[in-house]
Length: 196
Image (cartoon, rainbow, N blue to C red):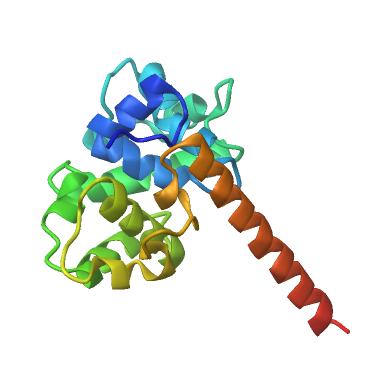
């Protein structure tokens, strides 16, 4: 299954062939539109003059120079300095703990819970992001260790449109956006009621 996350053929092709690019796109997916987050790895690869993102090379980069690459223009993220530092921290973990191969994070996982733990321990990944990425791996990349759906929580359910894990087309993207809008409205209403 080809990815439809950046909604740009070249950017999605990079995510398809480069596990670290996919991992970095997920890390960037906060406080900016999903497609901008997953387009970020392509922008970075272009600025580095490479066709794949090498975690060891990213980790070795001078932090100031690397932050300038994130700043652009255009900026890879609305918080380029902070996210550049986080990307380097993520790259360092992949280089040092997984032999410079992001796919080892999930390829060697024996269970959904182990994979969830590995993901949630990564820089820039909290509990929810780890569950969403686990669901993305299971639903769109065929990474399905024992218990993966349970470990992914509600994001692992079949036939739902809750997150980036469920985006495979323009239609599914709109369904995910509608769901998120509903959730925000419900949270806002709950907050309003509790403040009375």
